[in-house]
Image (cartoon, rainbow, N blue to C red; front, side, top):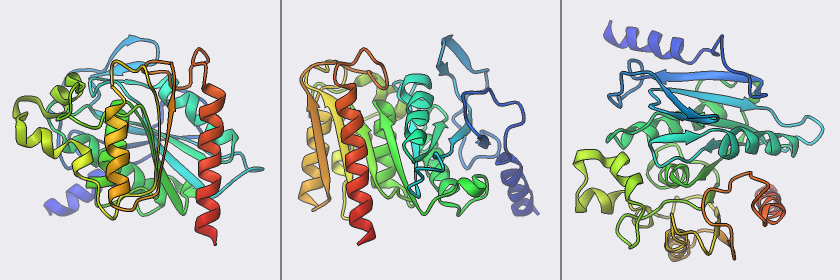
Length: 295
């Protein structure tokens, strides 16, 4: 009886949200909340919106699906994980804006509003994994928008989540694109706030090493593209370079684009001088990857 009740709750949690805010998405899918998910993050107070496009205190996971332009459809989909230090989510310039651009270029994009860990690192990981299953069509929710190949894109702490899903999840993405990702807690200078929010009071040397994802790369890690700025003082380039080196040690296909300036958190902002370059790099890498897989 308990198992039957849980199944009903999970199916109910994944129905399209009836009053979803309109960001241009075709479909909004509620994954689950702290009651219906495998684990709770312990947050029982409302979401916060300190600024437009910034949402914090997230305890309900949702997926905003932007279908590919039918004239350019590639058969590829991505799950996008916005950043925010595992305290909040930058849903616009690291989420919906990116998704609309990808959809216009033939890639179905699903922006994941994942639950904040609040010291429970398993929580955002299980949200990302469920989002991948939904977009792959092995779980209900995406309908006709499910795709045979599904990658993951992450920005900053969302890049940590994307890399965590690439290395620690049972359901892995087919590829990963990491924008200025947080990777390591053990190489100075680390982004302490991200790991404080991820690990909470359980943070110690062992947990820091476990969630320093250069240590978790293995032969099953998918091909990965990394994009970042040389002058990023918030999340220094060592985060990306140590992950890239780990990919190479395991023979995993990787590419890294290091732009001279731009700092941290540029996402889809026009103020980033190298926006045309990163857009071209992403599309070129995806096209090459798809061509290789079709051989």
